[in-house]
Length: 321
Image (tube, rainbow, N blue to C red; front, side, top):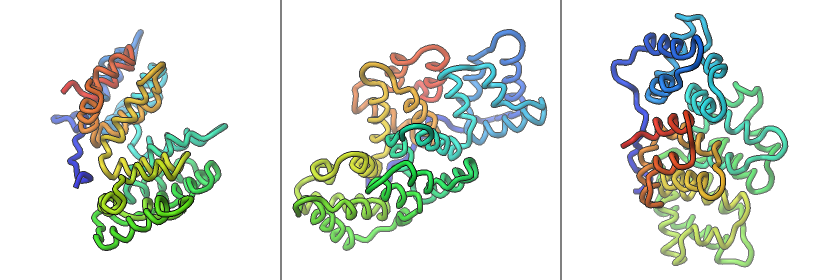
């Protein structure tokens, strides 16, 4: 099944790792006049997150200083966003992105979808627990205050862990679910949105892949074609994101990276978020998919869009291969 692609990261733990040597090298790169940004990139963009946490502990115990505070005082702009993002444990980083998408005026629904749609129940639980610890507020409550209607109900189902565990598959049920989806959309006047979000939020990704195959047999249309005709707005965006993640998560992220760099201006927040958060999961797969879809490498696209230390940091995470 396509969902079982083998995730290949671009950032892996470095061998012969010495947290103390890295901590002292980082201090050397930041003290005195000027900052050696390349040294910071060479160390932090080539260590795993677990290794970065060890470096931070050594920095504190050996030098009596806070590495993140030192980095913030020496760096600036988008380069700082990349490096500080790398220093956060993955679930904390995603929680920060969710919080940022909901604080202040208006809500960035696109970020909520991007962060939550690809997650398994186990990953969602980590995010939910971490969010409450960081912000002393349940994620479900914050989401409910910022969203409404079917979109709110879908997101709530995702974060309460309604999805069946990975590997849960029932071929007979898949036929039935495909029929339910057909009857809720193409097979009637109007659309019963509830059927769509309940099935797509409850079934495991493995099960959904079979449901989508059964849907095509039944309808002659793909589930994406049917949803485009039947749904709209944030609910459509969120459900189509789930469909893409079921079929091929790297395709989902490659498309979003392209959109972040397409046309006038660059959506740097999205670019940083995807490259930082996927670098230790499947960024190599995303790179391969990007090149296949757009006939250019992700590295060349980033080099064209970004500049300076910011560009060098992202390119180090993407890797030259």
